[in-house]
Length: 618
Ligand SMILES: [Zn+2]
Image (cartoon, rainbow, N blue to C red; front, side, top):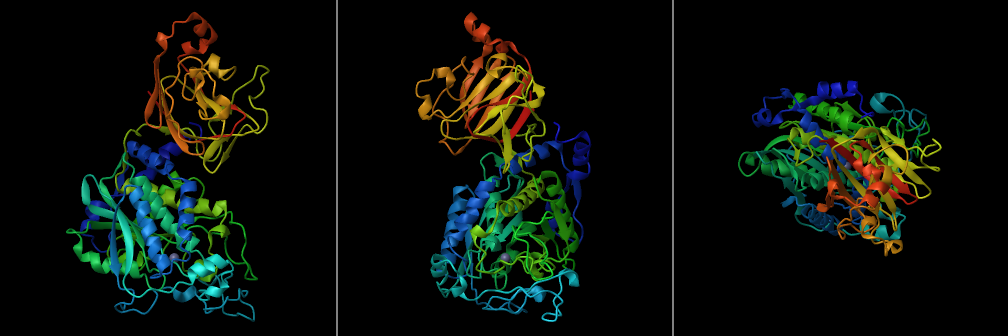
């Protein structure tokens, strides 16, 4: 395909294919020793690609929205306890096996004060809005930016519930801490071949600051939950286990993660699978850059926005952790859609810290914790403004790219396999129409009237005003073509197969109908005009379409004269074209004789969205 050049493919197969064979190595981890690098098999790439394709921006956003209904989720409050229940219910609905553990939030931490390391970037300002004073001015001669360079702004924690402007949210966040132990929930994908070894994927579900803790850390929690959803699908297996942990009590001392290490480290190899690595996610959305000289920040995401992967340079497992960090960066290069990743060596103040001397441990963030967030790069950090509505599409997309990064890396590390996805190649890069061309009209003009097809949020859609015929550049003969589609009311589109680039694909090629079968305009069609039919030739079985607004999955298999259409798992057409003997039909549809041609979307002035478009030649 056009959007992945031969050269890129070669790179992907060679350099791109490292995976930490953590399993054997980490069982008795030599202190700080690097883990093994192995070559990933090409088939594995199909699995990784298929899994990454199942991540869903809307689902990610909806999960964050769901978490924000519990306000800032401060540890031990009723809203925090309700959030734990809600998360557990979601994980269960994904089919991920849940468990809880509890801890005493007031238990003194051995050898330590309140919050972990790295307080360096935090200003005073408790209880009041910290003034965002400019750096290096007479008012603040000390304040500097990252690593003492550039500009910084003060940070702080809002401890005043009255500063929340939204009355409903203010009332919700007034609930006091209820004394007693606190619960946290995790769920586990059990490995098929080595269940006694596992990777831990973490985010903290509690927050502070009297906002909605949307970014800190709804954004990280939602990544963990999305990964739990994708890995828990029935057709996915992994060699080793993966635990999805939603830590509680991170704010104010990494309490949940520390309790987990205290309670479960010694159980490894017995009631606890052996730890292979720990990957934490915290504050995943806001990368608007360094404060300006006057202490203000850009309201827009910066063009250089990235995912920051960090390991701790002076931890006992620094070498293995670094290797794991580079593996994630590599996974980002190959599988994330929009944002790059960078690796840094100052992992601090995050739930992977309690693991860092035991096992490879890294953290993902929107920015570096010490040099960026600590110097005021996120003005919503622990503030009443950390609410869902603060964040833009681009911010959510950055978070999704972090999810793609971790998912792609963990899929390789855990030996993930998706039943039946081997050999499929993506036909759509999620970003633009590379590899696609418009058909031609009789007069030679492109077959579209105006905006044609557009790309947005990882989907191709035919515009309401227009549509037209959009084809693969490449021609296909025998193939399995898989895609997902979402209809609007009375929508009409179609999948052209074995079609020429010019002419009406329903006759000069073959059209597999795409239609809102429930549409008020379509109550009196002929059977072979409803969804999935070989249009005007072979009627499809009806009743397997999802309601308008929901995503459907479909597969069209063309093998010789046999055409099979599978909608949401049910075969709705299974036809042998040789059975069509009616001369009138054959004359009207000369394209039925085609052995090869382009695959395309045939728009008719209605919005229809397509995604996860992939093909396997047979
Ligand atoms: Zn956090």
